[in-house]
Image (cartoon, rainbow, N blue to C red):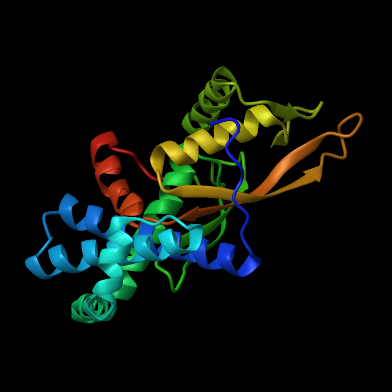
Amino acid sequence: MADSPIISFTDDQKEVCIKTLKDTYFAVKQLHDLISVDKLNESMRETIPQLVEYHMAEISKIIGFDSASAKKVEEKHAEIRKANETIRELEKKIASNNPIEGLKEQLEHYASLFQRWWRADGFGYVKEMRFTQYGRFEAELGISFHRSSIFSKKPASERQSKKEWLESLKEQGYKIYENERGGDKELIDCPENKELLINLIEQRFPSAFIEGWRNQRIYEAEGHVYEIHEFKVDISDLQDLKALERYFESEGEEEF
């Protein structure tokens, strides 16, 4: 309602409430993931909803909502606490049961797939890639228009391929700066190019988040013209990387 008063929170209440909401989200997501891959067992069927119920009861108390579920959870407080511990133990057990043999090769394989994709569908240059302790994949990507090798056995074909690629980029709406000598090309730092890059990344990797744009001035250009130099991609779901296997199989992509 328009006249309904706004609820005020202390800094502590707000911080605890937001943290508990995040915990609730992760519990619900785990339930979603287990059901999606048909791996929900009877133990987790009981544990996760109880955990969600406990978190929501905590949130209800903070925001002052006197819900029936909150009262019910309060009565089962000790039992739910135990459920909270159980889910963490189960998560640790699941993680410890995964064989570590071949893990290094798997990570290298997925990183290689990503690099191959950026060369094929993107702009070639990968500055750095890393897997984090939280199971995320991060990559710092650069923009390069060099797609041929001085050792190429098909230089004429590669020049034609590059020409067609540049034309397709322009048709897609990319704004490209070309110096007067027709040599180096740069991707202009503008909203249109950033939007196209974001769409390119997110369509292939739904869990991706793009941040850390870096630009630099194109000194040969008149006025203050900047190029997109680098940007960072954060992929939270490693299944997005694994999906590249099917993508290359279906597309029959070849490495440059």
